[in-house]
Structures are given as structure tokens and as C-alpha cells.
Length: 292
Image 1 (cartoon, one colour):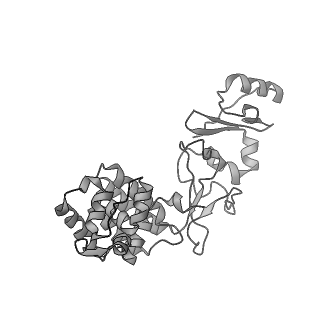
Image 2 (cartoon, one colour; image 1 turned 60 degrees about the horizontal axis):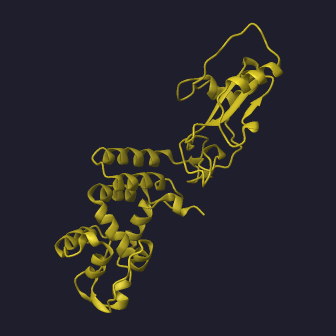
């Protein structure tokens, strides 16, 4: 939100710089570069321990000279008025932005920029590593609306995380078609976190045990349910529940093996997921794990 201030006296740049340094709250590792003062504008980058922040002071001449860059600062509502930047103004960004769907004809799209805390061991927020261009807005809004409705019916953190991943993945270049996405959201709504964990285990049994630091059972033959009991201790001794969870995954077309029949060692550790199951897991996976 921008607020217009009017002053009859115009102090020198040096005086303004001194006042800015004395009066502005600035935190950061490189304070010498966090206050940038020119004849027409003051730009400040700071942080609040957990959130990187930027704020600006510009005069009328600067705003008039660069409407394509500064018009968003002069309006406190969204979206901007249709004539805010002039009839010929087209926004052209100069920062690295990852496009997550091929653009249809036209100039309309949505930009998502993360402006919240993230670990300083990775990247700082205003380094723009998190800028994403979301094109194909109808599919994105369908996914967002559906996910919001499901989220209203749960407080489970695991399911909310799955919903977040699915919304982001809905606009990735390899995203399923809209009808398949709706089918997957219906599964997310019906499945518990235990369904999802079991499907993840069955998609890569050796990898599941390695990722969780769980010793692999020394089994040369037996039912696959024994692998699930070893990998998901909360289901140990509960073959009745394992059958119910597996039955739901089978009915949904996500696994295609019996968990009670006898198998050799190779069969026990082989994936049990169908191609649809693999696609569903990719749809609910953390999108950051797909970024090199």
C-alpha cells in the first residue's frame, strides 16, 4: 500500500540520506547496500529476522517517468485499474522466472512470488529464486478451488501438505489433464495419510526403508503384507487394516498386486503400483523435489 506525502521544502540528497540512515529500521548482513537513495526515489531492503521486506518512497516525477515499473506502488487495491499503466504499457520482467506451463496466445498470466520466510541456508526471499509464472490460469483456479474445499474438511497436516503440492503440480509442464486432476483430487479427498504412505511404500519398497532408516526384514518368501508391517510399524499385526487400505488402493486402480499371496524375495521388493499410481504419486509429490 502506498501513501502520498506532500512537502513544500525539498532537502538535499545528502540530508535525506543522513535522515534515512538515522530513522529507517534496517536489518541485514550487508546494510551498506540495503538503503539506495537517489534524487527521485528511496528504496530500502530489510528483514524482520524471518521475512525479507522491501519498501519504497518515490516522488511524482519518478512515478510519471516509469509507469511500467512503479504503477503498482501507487495503488492500494488489486487488480490495478485498467488504465493504470497507459493503454500501451506491457509488463516486461527482468528477473529469472520459471514458466510452468506453455503460454497460450495473449499476454495474460499470473505471477507467484514467495514473500514469506524460508531457510537462510537455501536462498533469501528477495533473491527471486521463488518467482513462478503460472500460465493456464483456468486449470490452476480449478485446482485451487477444489483443494480449498477439501482443506475445509480436514485438519490433518499430511493431507494439507499433499493438497499444497497438488495445486502447484497442477500447472507444471508435465501436469495431468484437467479431468485426471479432478480424479486425483477426489482420491486425495477420500484417502487418509495412511493410504498415501502405503502407496508410497509399495511404489518403491527398498527406497522407503532406506529413506526412513528402517532395517529391511530378512524375508526370502512371504506375503507383501509382511513388508508393509515392517515398513509401517503402526500397522504391525493389523492385517485387517492393511487389507482395507490396500483394497481402496486397488479399487482406485493404483496398485495391481495381492498383498496376501506368497511371493519370492524379488517379488516382495518389486513395485506394486500401476502407471496410474505412479502418476498420482507424482501429482502429490513436493514440487521442490523436481527442481534441479
